[in-house]
Length: 152
Image (tube, one colour):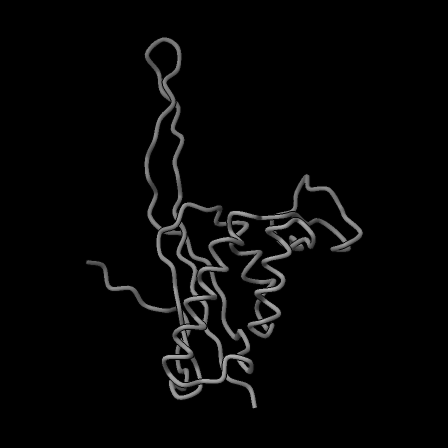
């Protein structure tokens, strides 16, 4: 079994809680943008934002990977609806909330202080082409981790 670690260090375990999901099949680029969008929000606000993304009511602003993306008035620039990532993030926030309840923290006061997406292992695939050739078509898996702290 691999030994998973978090990229955030020096958290006080009495007021913080962590959760992660490993090797999921979502886009690493859109995962990064969703993590940037929920960082700094309260847990209820983050959940509401992700539910609105799944229902296609609110957009996630794309800050880094926005080349050839359409501009929208809602995000004041490039944006989109990463529905698949949002569904996985909702499950991750449910896990984070369950961890907080187990620790005895107040879930209404939780603020997301850390959210990160990292590239996982690459699954090699190939498209068969003409004349016995093949074109690589790799699938990159993603690790997402979230940490929240209880605000005063």
